[in-house]
Image (tube, rainbow, N blue to C red; front, side, top):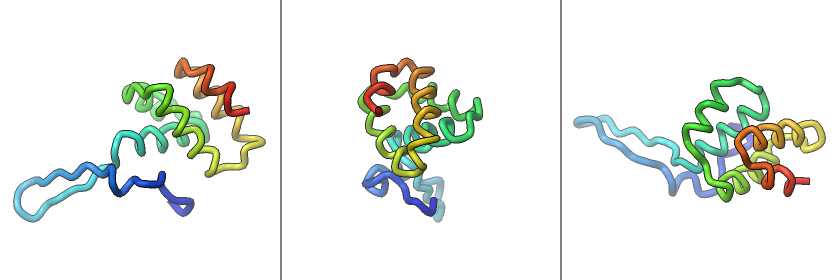
Length: 99
């Protein structure tokens, strides 16, 4: 969180009200894709990969999310992990274009 959320995330918040006095703001789909891609690439935790696959991101979403993810880690050691995650998502072209 100290490095920030994807630009424009506040405009993509999904707001739900649950009775009087309880309003919850949820991150939007693209922001979830960014955070899940980052977490899966960074930790390799299967749960993040499962969550990301359930979101069924498009190649365009993965490409944009990848660019954001790379701003949050040192690219030298992190890039191969990100590329592996993208390949496992069936986004080999996106992974190749990050070089």
